[in-house]
Length: 295
Image (cartoon, rainbow, N blue to C red; front, side, top):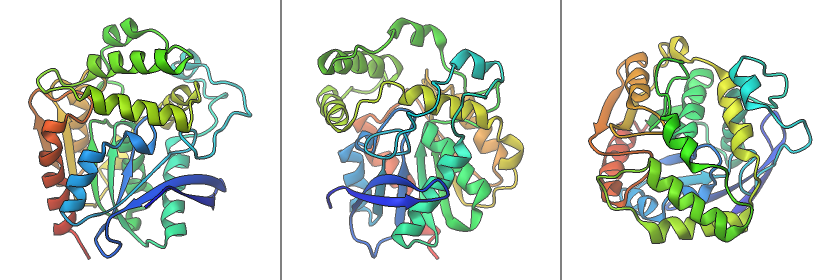
């Protein structure tokens, strides 16, 4: 199905662009992507594996990404100020993004869904499970963390070497490929052709240079979810790689430890990304959780 736009979504009354894949009679699974990324960042190969296993997928652009509403009117946030606890220029939080997602459920007529969130998308999914537990059938939290300062921290030496993204399409794509390789899974083959295709499609859809900043400070503003996660009573799967340089594996371990009954799967050699060699494993894990928790 082609992309569609939902309007007046959630308390913020924003536009969200989404795509529905598969049989609508299958269990609904919302795919929530990470910081600065669009719905096309979900690899088509992974989506295909999930569809084969009888899941109805809804992937969408979070606020400030892709073709959904962007928050360009206010002042540009200052990352250092946010790190120091000053959120006066931060336009929204993960709670707002969670409300957007629940609002999209309302527009599409879902009382509850299964959530799969990657990186920042995992933080949003956790927030939905905390704040809207009745809307969640199961939670899959991938390569993400609790928001606690002592876990899940990035390797800043890797990030510092990347530098800012160039402002032209070709330069941006080359920078993104270098970035994905730097934080990715060295033990698994890198799908450069697929990564270039997704990067090109994302650029052509939208290239807001400040989306990553605004979403990053939203995560900071939302703080530590550890204690709130202890109240989550949703079947939960936590997937993390032991070679993740963007979100250290301690973030996944802390997430699983905080959520009662959560299953933790740590994958050897996996970094921050979706290596094609792991599509089948991801799909098996996610579909097993979903089908075992259909109501």
